[in-house]
Image 1 (tube, rainbow, N blue to C red):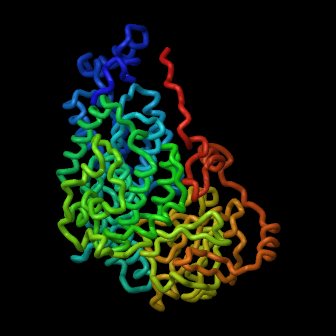
Image 2 (cartoon, rainbow, N blue to C red):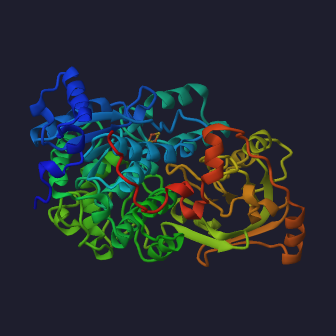
Image 3 (tube, rainbow, N blue to C red):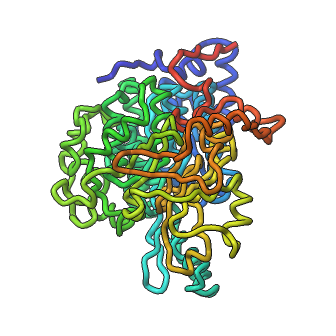
Length: 574
Ligand code: FES
């Protein structure tokens, strides 16, 4: 149903009036070779493109922008590509999480300050997806997310390699002395074979799947490998559809509601998705004005089966998932746990979108009768060590460690950990609990993916491959291990993690969702009184702004001034 006409388009204020400023806009459009018929009365579609020479996951997005433009032109729109900061997970330091909110701000303000009527968001590398969605939801113009798509399977000597997961696995073997430099360098050349995002169920595929489950991408878009011919077709179709969405005035906040967030969380759980999804979904919901707490993840985790047999929790990779039917097939298998009435960018419900979906490989996409795991993909832990919560992915840990007590081995900083972890005299054994602090949103800063602390070399050589690790950091979605993450409040602001001492006993009970420091309240009070905060490392600049406004992990790590839906006026044109 069309609810907009050309004169009610936002861009009409820039192009359609008979005044001095519109003269300037039209004359400068002419200077770029545009004739009035290109844009007059047509929706202007901003294509927010996070392509960059320094982001291998997005190296194909220049061409994809052209595919989107083709679709926009054909549907009667006027495409305008707008480059935005790229968040390249592998190259950007200290961590892309420092810049998620910056890209979100940039997306929102690009859309606000230019004559956009709708937008297509191009990205996929970990933080890019939540950042683009957060910005677009805050601006609330019609929006479609075009996921970058996963890369092809890795290969080494005939063995399939998965991004991140196999890096961690073979790095542990190298440190244990089980593979040599030549083999390691062959793995380096075989693990990333094409454009696209990590092809395990890491943060990238988790978040692009979240975008689709929320209803913000075309059905099936998130599973298509980046270099498959169906990927540019999907980009083209997204370009066509966004023009219709502008006329229909179908905006993100018409699509998002509490039920769609429940669907997204259930999807993360059924995929065995990244723990990072917890933080990002909290932040995305905050932009949509929807109340979401970490406890919802635990609630849904207790009843949602793990259906996708994908690394790091399972066996296969995204390419296999796509051939097995992709996300629509998984959503259909999970239908009993979802609200299928939720609206999507197609203008149809989730039920209509997945009606034709089929599973072609039941070992890759399991049924609820034959899941990889009955439930418990994520666990939210609480206790005197994490009053505001901590996150763990039990499916990626050795089950023997789900109930565990051991002596703390404490590292105050990442550098200290690096310097001591392999020391032959480190007082550690397989039962010890490795603790890293000052790795949270403010402490690191930026809450890097340090939560998968390395196993000490002497234990690796003794055959140990997992042990309990606790931090206020995040962990790569491609990693695995008994890692308790996102401890909140973080140690840098005086959270109880700051009070742990070497040799204290820490108890974990995943089934009871408990994380406990076996130290008396009186002793903790004494330690708290003696605790002194560390100084922040940014005297000026963006880092200072970050430290002043970043929220804690259980709140989503958005900037406090970006949350909510308070209306911001349209820019005046003078
Ligand atoms: Fe970009 Fe993994 S490094 S998705």
